Image (cartoon, helix red, strand yellow):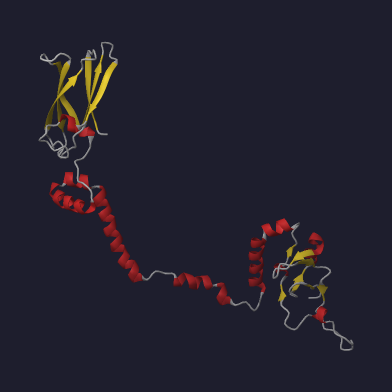
Length: 282
């Protein structure tokens, strides 16, 4: 075309097609998309028109070497305002230059443009490996669920408890009764002074397990209050403190069963007019 202009990068000798609008920006200062050299695009304008035969001497710089690379003006960018801006945008501009080169260079190797697809295909996991991994993962998931819900499984399906106990011996865990405090209730309670020992109180209470499966022994909390219903003293008793020596603290209260408790409390240092019994799991 008659209005085409060409400028040569003084750093790498690459010739670029340029437009007047591009050269008018930043007073003609541009940056080479190949070697990153900043130069005056107007001062570096060259002519690629054939030289007359009668000229005694050829201008190699004007015509360029036979192996010169000709690129589109999209590979040129306006020169940055200062070096700080140049460093800050180097990576973005380099990507843009590579994209411009890829879209304008007629000698582009198209296989390299789609090399990412080949890499993606090489990274695909073999089908047989996926088929092998799925059942292994399902087994691991089932084992994790069995470990986490072992107490509930043993409570709802008692026939599985022996096998779960054996598995826990290997995995260093325990199969314990459930701790559903809503399944427990206090059927009766009574607090009386011991006539034979001054200041000694005797608490008698009955705990009922309304569930069909065993529940762990709860903690029993006793609160003593005065005539104004203000708390005088509060004490929590662990299962080991109210169970008999023959009872197994890990056994729990059987399903649909009751547990009678009797506690002796030294209240010689307090004066109380009422009491309250409360069950809980820590």
